[in-house]
Length: 339
Length: 262
Image (cartoon, rainbow over all chains, first blue to last red; front, side, top):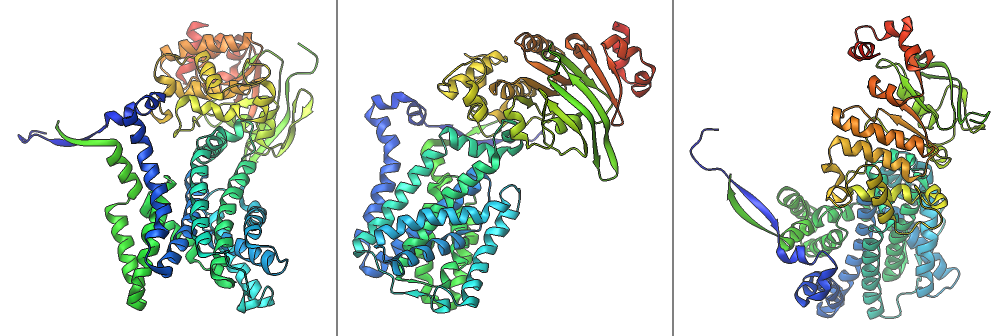
């Protein structure tokens, strides 16, 4: 090009402190240590403080719902970006986990704190077994089947009038107290988040990521990919069922609305807003989206319009997601250079 | 060499719809041999690899490994028995650093059983074993190359990474699908001793190649495929003297070059 004007471009360079705190040496300096710990501490303390700063029981309940959706978004992000299975199964997992916990609690009389873990594990098994047939397939099949099951199960319950039919299962015990509910779901969310973050960096996690990257090469490495996909689906669906089990005890009711597609769609929107593949991002996305959708209730039916506009804005102007943007600002600085 | 060959392919046929990609191909590979498979484009070379390693199902015929029928077994079971392969179009895990690529095969049941590569007994840290294997295969341990993101590596290293994945499984047989293609002359020159070293360590190799000169340096026997049928089998000189082979390769530069050197 023969234009006289000098061309400029933006250069991104890792901050010194980021580079210094990469290795083990970070342990030798408080500054570097603080640099590493601060974002994590902010998230943990921030989340744990939320119920305390919320005005009134209504907004405290909103925080519980945020955590439920965050668990689902976490499960979606893990499956989609670390195993390569795009799941629309939020509603399926919530439904299975919710109904199981409701049955354990009302029919068998188990206390809430036993019914939830039991529903988590049992629900994980049920979902994995039901999804097994489509695991050897690649592509869109998994998404379609996960979308089909909640519709299917809801209609079966309605048509056969089992499990309370359209009235649902009533008389489910609530959490022992509002504080147990709040902090129960918050702690479960934090534990799941950090557990998954750790899992994806272990050798097993690398195998799962390899399945996403190149499943043929994993087969050639003498490994049964269906086995590993099933394991990942079990982990993700157990997290989803945990969310479902919690929500029926929050509402004290399990009906066919636990199979609502909101549970599938909102986590995906939250993942887009928060930053795909970051695991923390989807949680932050839910922290934004769920309260926003509550605030928009005043607009009645226009609510969905505003909601869509907000989503559209995020996708157009910050398609990388809040978390990816934040990480970049935290770890790198930018400057203009002439070329 | 024992009386049962390591690998025996009996009358294997593969049809894709009406197209017959392989027509009653039979051959056997003895323990410790290097067997080359050559043929013009579309002659069914890669299909043979895919059939042996279970990536596609054969239409008819039988494949025996150490006398055991492996026809129709899934790829991971066949790899678990020690029959490994490289891919013509490299299939590394691009989003991982190079050495982390080897954590995956080292995680497999076979590597846990055999200790992976030369290790016996307990495996130890997979990252360390992975870097050992990479060093063996030509990645400089002290350079930054093994730690680089795989997507930034040049073709030469990716081809080596394919071989490294096989080695991590402590294989008995490696089927190399065009490991020399896409490499520069000097890169090939550094690969040849590597192949010879693998043979000395007792690994049997089947090599599918277009680079005939380098193949003839290492291969004990060569088999020629054309339109899915086996034309001839024998030493390099025997094969190249065959009129049908000359016809199949007519006009090809490779063969002219080999003829001059023969």
